Image (tube, rainbow, N blue to C red):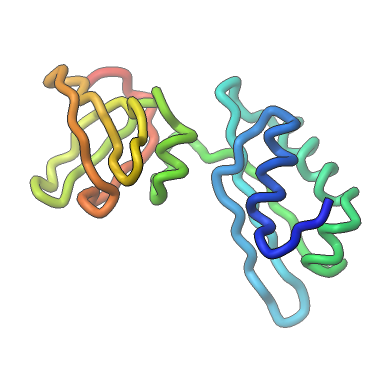
Amino acid sequence: MSFGKNPEEELEKRLTELGYSLVKLNIVHGKTRNKIEIIIYSSKGIKHSDCEKVSRMILDDPELDKLFGENYNLEVSSPGINRKLYTLREYMIFKDRPIEIALKSTGHPFIAKIRSVEGDKINLSNLKKNELIQVQLQEIQYAKLTDIKEA
């Protein structure tokens, strides 16, 4: 596999083959060693064995060594139940999941379910008011995953 100019795209392809979604790739360049942080997701959940499987796939890939060098720390983890959402990509990955969200216009948090992402708009259903709303990413004060099913 050749990472070329976009390591995130190539890593995502490999993870998809294994049944995972790439939530985030973070590369922290250090003086003596780089830190590679990878967050993966599966609708079936992520277990320690899944993180280990992905770690092995990455560590056994000679192209990764070419990209990051041989002196790096690798961390593979799951998003966690209260993970904040920052990008449209994350809203797409967590479609149909409940979130706690606050809009900049009101500042009041509410529980919603992510319905879809269309272009730069996120479609949500407010679980308390039983209404559909559409927002743009820049209108969101914060949003995070939650296990709350209803408000």
